[in-house]
Image: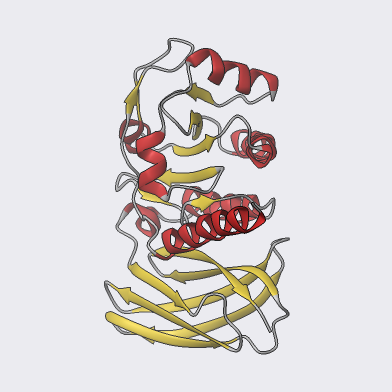
Length: 266
């Protein structure tokens, strides 16, 4: 039995890691009536109107889903006061088998103010599957994701979410309303020991900043790469001096941001 549990756990972790390596960069549209009978709600209409949309896909038996939802409440409260009318949030059941009564019970019991919606299975599969909760932040009339889908949850994730949202809402329209100039971001090996290869494509010439932050949001490493050329780029990051642990790597161009989780093991 222990071997079966270990194998099942390994399979889930492997699936999550593979999905992170091929993370989506644009949102998946939906048109729904919520579990309170409101709507219809159309994601792309929300984004086209200038709103930033936060979506949590939750499992009712998942303790981190509750932690994530309640942590997002604090994040949303701060952002709504700073950017009135610009923040909207949804809480989707991760499976199509949850009834609206189940959805409403979960959001009400845990004091979640996001719009409650059922039947999120197709979207969960699109954003990466197995990890719970799955959280996405979408914005702009190009329906871009701000950062990669957050599959699983660390409390430090909200620091990155807040930074990305504020960058979008404070920055010039061209930063996010045009397509992110960074695409096909791949990190390998991951987990990494001494050298992490960072492979990405640029749609135009750009200066690049690569940052590594720990789970508390503290900046660990920052490097500027000047005048990187359009097309495929490969950069090696020396991780020898970074302690073993879990980190977020963010790569920012003059026209977009992409991020991935990395694990360093010495």
